[in-house]
Image 1 (cartoon, protein in one colour):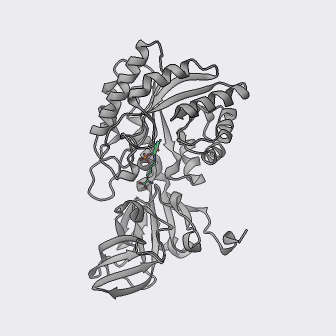
Image 2 (cartoon, helix red, strand yellow):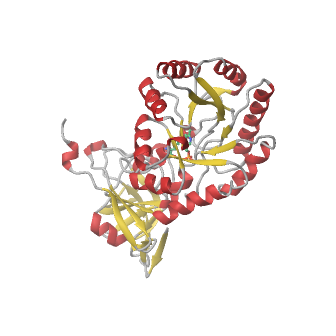
Image 3 (spheres, helix red, strand yellow):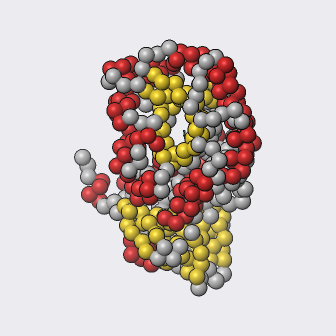
Length: 408
Ligand code: LLP
């Protein structure tokens, strides 16, 4: 989505500088074209099997992003009642909604049952029992899959490792048969599928393959025990290239997992989040001050960890590019935010052209888990968001104002 034209950064056909001047900074900019390309390039590789691509809404739940994906035919992977509310408003049909999450409350379960969503991914026996009781009370049936923890190390940051033994997610795969048998005996539960999600920002195909093998083994054992599943949900987690990573392509992911299921004739579900929206967004920040301290150069910018927490929380690397001035002499600098924490940085030791106060930087691959994880920490106003579509653009969320910080 990003390219330089005569030394100025463009998001598709729109000047980043022009957008930053018009809307101010910090500013999230998304490319509709990149978003749709990503969705289609993922979706199309599974054409040979029945499949459903359910976008993981937590990655970016901006209304315009959701509406664009819903109109393109995507399903949604949700994780709360709030996400259900948003995806229904955005036009995702209930029959394409899968609901994961280890802590669904009774109110959330009731809401999703009333809306008749496609699938609940269940993570504990107590959740199963509550689901059954709630469905009975509403005179409904709940279609469920169990989220099985296949005990596979995805080799990613430990905070986003979800399919290993000892984490809070899923049912240990050794217990799978037992929980399915229990569910099959419940009056208001339809046992329909199996789910696994082993982590996020996974950059090798091996862990996906191993998890798929373990899930396939369970599907076979269930079938022998008389429990036939109609869908297999292999979760999300496909990594993207922030820097030098070489993650598998969707086709490589497909070639790793589908051969593990030669016997399976049902529907495959995938829940990509980051792959769909990650490289479709940037965060633009303006330089407030420059200083040198303790032998380091600092660029103090107007976006901080409340706008993009990934560098702070996961020590994640995001490329940072100057919006203009690229032909100038370069210096090494730490790009830091205005928040009162030493952990408030966007990038350290970055080679950047010597920028003046008021000039701008673009933090790349900020479309996923960027705005979605932003906060008002330090009573800062959350950023504006803009969608670029070819040569046009539109504001898709206004910048917050001080009135959004009212005391009650
Ligand atoms: N399905 C389930 C059940 C999930 O928990 C997640 C992400 C996804 C799908 C989508 O994963 P993706 O394709 O986006 O990797 N905030 C972190 C990432 C947290 C991921 C949580 N679950 C980050 O900024 O790296």
